[in-house]
Length: 333
Ligand code: TXA
Ligand code: MG
Image (cartoon, rainbow, N blue to C red):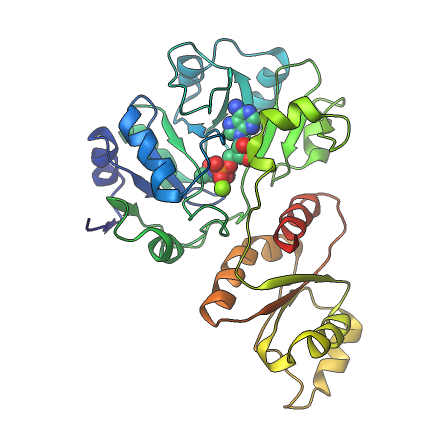
């Protein structure tokens, strides 16, 4: 199969209506989209990605009116979150409509719904005219794609079309997934809509717990699978100094990579770095948002360079840091 790479949302949407798979950009990561009501197209998503069939898909919509095409009802908590955060990097989990194909929700009675805010994504979804089921557009287990080139690397020849955005995805981490079935929303996956901002709207919002939320965890199988991982071994460190020591011990500094944020003490020290004393790839991000945006792309660049070890700086688990640490610890498993 030849994969068409286009900038035209209308052309890309034509393929969705013909039952083909289309990778499309959103502000979080690229999605691998199919018509929610086309069983064969849905099956192709799982085949093409190598995705376990027990992992449900998120449905993407262009307009709020489409929510009731896929959900049975909108709970009061979901209503509030939707009012505040749609369109945006938030997925709400609601009871699903009966006629939603079983394969899309992996047999669950619920469905994750998201309305992206990226203008190109919106144009594309509007042109599709149907709800679009889409996981992240990467081979299963790999880091999500934040550029069209990453999508091409993983899926070229396996899907009909890639809708190409001019820039890297703005957020760079997947959406915040919130279970809105009970009165108290539960964050199943941290993302750019932070726990703090959710709590400002609904103060009782809480993070899913590994120990006491077995049943809820079971309902979000994606959180059980290994995820977001490059081929390299990932080591979490507090700072670059620790990374250098670790890399020297584990392989060779010149083969290893480092991603983190600049520190005052580091800036001074790096000046005195000898030419012999350098990582093969090193990325210092000026703030948390840039760190989050760059992470998956950095992982992929390290894979291309066949780097065996990537040291990543830990961050505080507040704000966006919660999502970033979630992806880092999963990749480090
Ligand atoms: O930002 C994103 O969410 C991207 C873009 C493309 O929208 N999509 C994405 O999809 O990351 P995926 O399939 O890679 O991750 C979806 C996550 C999985 O952890 C899955 O288990 C969870 O959402 N999920 C989907 N439907 C669910 C449901 N009905 N109940 C609980 N969790 C659900
Ligand atoms: Mg994914």
